[in-house]
Each structure stands twice: as structure tokens, then as C-alpha cells.
Amino acid sequence: MTPAWSYALASVIGLSGVSLIGITLISSNRTRVQQFVFIMVSLAVGAMFGDTFIHLLPESFRSASSLTPFYILAGILIFFLLEKFLLWRHEHIPHYGNCVHPVGYMNLVADGLHNFIDGLLIGSSYLVSLPVGLATTLAVLLHEIPQEIGDFGVLLHAGFPPTQAIWLNFLSALLAIVGALTALITGEIVKTVPEAILPLTAGGFIYIAGSDLVPELHKERDAAKSVVQLLAIGAGIGLMWLLTLIHS
Image (cartoon, rainbow, N blue to C red; front, side, top):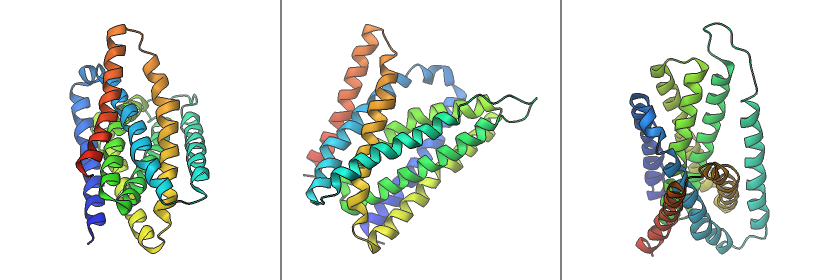
């Protein structure tokens, strides 16, 4: 097994495990954790922007493909369409007694797809280099934590018992392993795959951070918390920069 395979599989397995641990903690003390969601979202914004502009874009243009700008734009459009689907899943559907609300199943399908894409991005990043893979893994981890909080809440609201919601969410997270394996197998057969996936990832991160996460931060109007948000964004960017220094 090559180093890329070892690091990629260890990352996605660890990412799945962190998802399970995080959801378990949330289920035991959801109110307290919810108070710190704005900090985790801020860290995610900094990490995603930092990973994009410090790692992904420079690495993408280093490969010097004339299609790189179009891959970036395609990444933005793909995640725009994915969000359209995720918004559609939240359309009003009447409840029927004690049955699980259909939106719960929709959430599992969408979250599974998202985790598969995360695994695909992580696996492809490790094929390029260890620093790029680590940076992408960290960025995915930081934006995955607040997302998992939201997904867990949707499952509870849909009518799943807490224990069942935890395990279903964990099984959905395991699709990241499938995504990583897909990227590793395909990437070693077709060497141009990472060259396309990295700018697609950059476009996706730009869209998610700028379109979804930043507007969430603006909902917080308290001055002190806004300062904390800014510091957390800076910390996320700093983590990406630190990874560059460590592996330079």
C-alpha cells in the first residue's frame, strides 16, 4: 500500500470516527454544544478559504492545465446545484402520526452523497502530495462538525430515536471511505483525475464558505461574538498556513 493510500484511508476512517464521537457528545449535551456552533462555523470558513487560496489553487495552476479556471467554475456550479437539491429536501411535507418524516430519509441520502464527495476530494488530494491531503482533510473536518450538528438535528426532528439517528449518521459518514477508494483507484489509472478534482474542490469550498457559511455568521450581531468569529476565521487560515510551513 502506497503512502497516499495509507494516509487517505486513515484520514477518512478517522473522519468517520470523529463524526460518531461528535454526534454522541451532542446527544448527551446538545444545548451546551449548540452555544459553540458559531465558533466551529467560523473555523470552517477560515480553513476552507485558507485551503483554497494557500493549497488548492496554487497546486491546481502548478499543473498548468488550460481547463483549470473552468474546473473551478464548474465546482462552484456543481455545489450550487447540490444546494438546490438540499433546499428542495426541506420543502414542507405533512407529518403522519408517529412515522418518520420523509425529510429524514432525504437528509440521509443527501448527507451520504456529501460524505462520498468529501472522501473523493480527500483521496484525490493525497495523490497530489501529503501537505495538500492533510490541509484538505483538516478543512473537511472543520466544516463537517457543524454540518453534523445540523444533520443530527434534522434526523431527530424527523422522528428518528436518538440512538438510531446517531448510527444512521455514522453509516452515512462511512461513505467517505468509498469516495476515497474511488479517487485512489481512479487517480492511479488516470493521472489527470487529481488535476480536475483539485480545482473542482476549490470551487466547491469557495461556494460553501462564501454562500452558505459566511451568511450564517452574519446572523450573529453581538459585537463580542463577532470578534470571536473573526479570530476563529483567522485561526482556520492560520492552520492552513502552518501546514505549509511544517511541510515546506
